[in-house]
Structure formats: structure tokens, C-alpha cells
Amino acid sequence: MILYEEVADFPVFADFTREQVDQLLLCATETQYEKGSVLIRESGTSSDVYVVMDGRVDVEIQSYARSPLNRGNKRLALLRAGDIVGEMSYIEQRRRAAKVSAFDDVRVLCIAKEDLDVLFEREPQLGFLFMRNIARIISQRLTELNFLWRDDV
Image 1: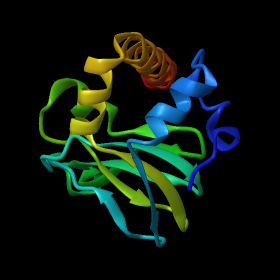
Image 2: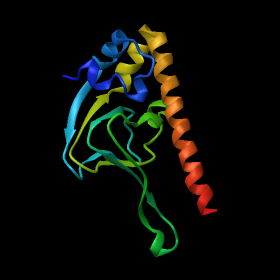
Image 3: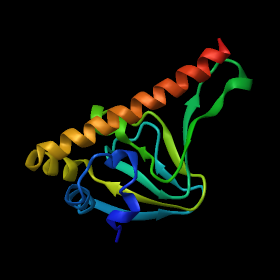
């Protein structure tokens, strides 16, 4: 069972009260994956959200570049404890845009979309805080990518 103290400082829970974190944790399932295991398949259809508790996960996309030298998996991010993954499919309800695999042995919280939707319907303030935090996380990631790509241009 995940305790409040383990996740209180995670960015996705910023500005949550202890009660709000506890409510969200009731929707979460703790899952462990061995190194190399796939959590999310690119083009998959699930909309669950994952919060990394321990270890690291590798976020990759398959490149279909014309040049054989540029084909294969391209790393987008290496996420650590406190990071969230799967948020884009939760928001857009589209196929998964990337593959996520365990870079190390990892422990994650898996939060089902359906459970989040029910909770946020019942607790709109909690839904607002969660979505605002996801927007902040996505904004930060885009800013970091912009700086990386700017140096390549």
C-alpha cells in the first residue's frame, strides 16, 4: 500500500491536501515491472496513468526514417521516481504515442482512467488540481524539448 508520505512531494500531487492524495491513492494499484518489461505499448489503446515510484522508465518512439541509420527506437525521456507517464492518452483518449518500458526494476502506481473520471466527477476540485499539474508537467517537458531541439537547428 502506498502511503501519503511516499508521494506528497511528487509534482502531479502539488497543492493537494492529504485527504485529496489519499482519495486518489484509493484509485491506484501498485505494480512492479522487471527491467525491460513494457508498461505501455506504442499505438496501444489504454488510457491509464502511471506514476513512477521507484526506478526509471524509458519513453521511446519508433522512427521510420528513410535512412537506415536513423531507423529504430528514439528515446524521448528517461523518467524517474515522481514522474508521470500516460497522461497524454488520458487527456486525448487516443492511441499511445510512445512505448514505455522499465529501464530498471520499477514500481509504479497505475491509475485507471475510469476510476479517475468517477473521482473527478465526484470531486471536481481534485480533478482541476490534477489536470493543472499535468498541464504544468507537459509544459515543462515541452520547454526542455525546445531547448534540446534549438541546439540541433
